[in-house]
Image (cartoon, helix red, strand yellow):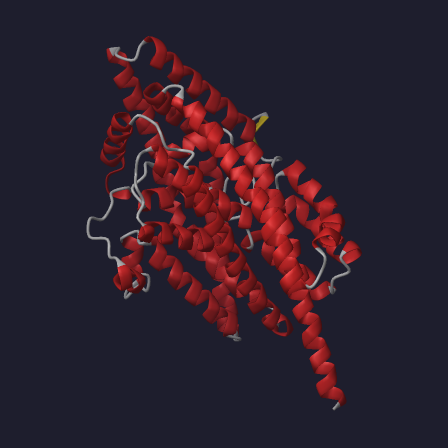
Length: 438
């Protein structure tokens, strides 16, 4: 969900370096085949083997994604009311997170539709890969021909049977239930509810551990994905990849330097210049470490010493925000889904893009704070809209730079949320004081 932790290592090399090596090896081998041996008989055999290895990786992710998102979303919402005195602060934090994340994803979808970084590749090759992907992944990435539309689509978000929704891989319905359930826990103050919350948090921790093990296979999977894609598309991959990086950076910059200043001025009543001048230390740490968790102590220090925010609400918002308020991750997920849909020639309807919007908003709240934690969410959204999840191999090879940039946006957003929510906390205290004196 957040950014990739630079300290996690598999063997002697950090994981992100291993992923880059896998990306380059797969890309180099694929381009070599594309240029010299495209019609050789052995290429199809090798592609079948690499495709099989990649499918194992994807199926492991899909196996874990429902317990991961359900537990993370429930716990993320419920923790916003852990302290009774901060329950109103928790609701404000939830409202800020949903609204600003919604703006972030709308921005991402608009920019991806305007610039279309994935458009222009060979449609026949793209269609062939789409068909192969459907055959390989079977029911996982098959699109439902009877997908509801209009009011029926909205009604379908509310599951009549949550277990049936889970078995049908109806992730939007599952996430709606998780959001509803988390709000129920937020307002339930009993010993049994606390025990239940602790149990769901245990599921979250176990699933995170399993995700970390699966992510260790990512370098091998990326090499396999890139071999198959580069051997089919050739140099088009590099051209589209450069355009994708520029579009993501553009969206992150607009959100950072236009959306946040408006939010800070209108809701927080503070000067954006003053804010950025005082949070630059945390932004620099976030960019250099690419880890929101590693930046949290510095963010707390900045909120206390530089922004002079009330300690209790600021600590609450920043701690929750490290796992729930991830505008950069939401932007990354939205653009990545549309980029790969354009790359493979999948035309997403307005209804499907609304589903992507909702998934990215909820995914931003319910994505695990582990290295490459957004990977299961992106893969699942791709599967829902009929795009080969194998396409994630394209973007993960250049993810390190984007990871650093979106982590900076995530951390800045947490501090902006703390500033806005703390203002509301101060107003509550002033009102309470007036009522007491009266």
